[in-house]
Amino acid sequence: MSIFHKYYQGDCQELTRLLGLCGIDVSCILCCECTFEEIRNMINADLNIVVDSVYGLEAARLLEEEYQMPYIVCPGFPVGFAAAESLICQVCGRFDLDPAAFVTESEKSRARAYIYLSRLNSLTGLPKGAKFAVHGTCSQCYGYASFFICYFGMTADSISVLDLPKDNSRPSPHYEALCRLLEETSMEDSLKKDILSTDAELVFADGNIIAKLKARHLDFSGIEISMPTLGYTDVIPKTHLGLSGGLMLCEQIINGLMFR
Image 1: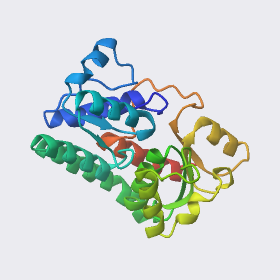
Image 2: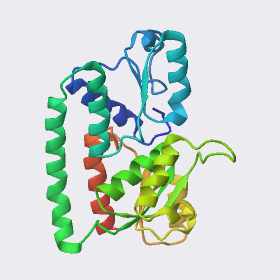
Image 3: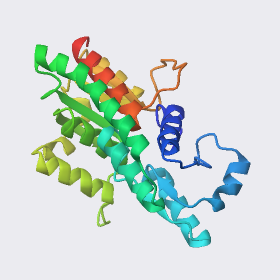
C-alpha cells in the first residue's frame, strides 16, 4: 500500500475487514502508518500480499529471500467486486479456509449496487457507454479500468500510466494485462491519448490533473484517486478497494454522471 493513494486509511481498513471475515489476521501494512513493532514482527507472517507492485514488490522479494515468506501480487489494484472476490478467494485457497462469510457479504454488496445502477440505467441508459479517463500507476489503471469496463460497460477514453515500461525492458504483468483488456475491448487507442486532451465524462486522477482539466472549462466530473488532492477533507475513512470501494465508486459514478 502507499500513503500516495487517496483513501489509503480506508483501503487498509477494508482489506483487513474482508480478510478478517475469513479468519485471516493482518499483522502489518507496510508504509501505511505501521509501527516499528509491526515491521519487526513482519517476519512471522505466513503470506505477503502486494497490492501495488510499484510500492511493495521489492520488499516482498526481499522477505521471500531472507525469511522464505511467500507472496502473491494482485493482478491489479483490487478495485470492484470481481477483483475483491478473486483476491480473497486466492488467499483463502492458500490457507485452505472457507470464504463463505466473505461471499455472502459480496453478494449483498452486488445486490445493493444493482438497485441503484438499474434505476439509473432504466432512466438514462447510463453508465453504459459513458467515457472515462484514468491517471495512475499501471496497477491502479488496470484495476480501475477493468472495473469500469467489465462491470459498468463504460468506455476508456484515456489511460495515462505513470510507470510505463522503459525502452527494451520487459513490460510488467500489470501492463500486459492492461493492454490485453484494452485490445479485447477495442479501446487500445486510449493508451496513446494524452489525459489533458480527454473529453471523458468522468476523470479519475490526482488533484493536479483534475485542476488542469477544470481550468479548460470542460464538462466532466473529477474523482480523486491519489495525492495531491484538491483539498476536500475526508473525516470518515473512505475506500475504493474491496466491496465497500465498489459501492463507493458506484455512488461517485452515478452522482458524477447526473450532476457534473
